[in-house]
Image (tube, rainbow, N blue to C red; front, side, top):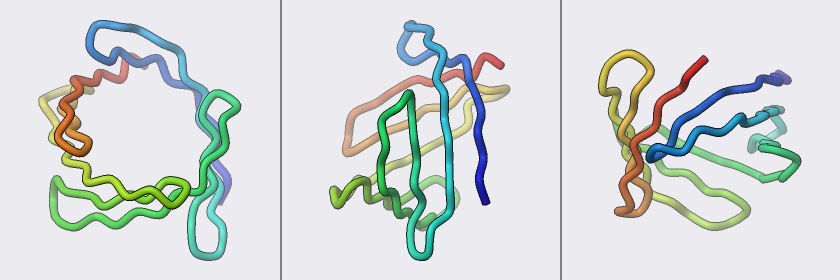
Length: 86
């Protein structure tokens, strides 16, 4: 699987255009975000909790939909309000 997309997002009041490319490898995903490449492995633990490993570093992520394209994302205790604009 190989996916390429552009998103317009708002994170904490700051709007950005983000280019995302995702390619499934044998045991992980290769993710390119704005020309930065990452090796990513993740597991969905329940409806809102995820365990994500990016380039060998582990993150606890909680993501809740707040209606429409708005999400509350908590990464290792740090809160982000995210809206996907397109």
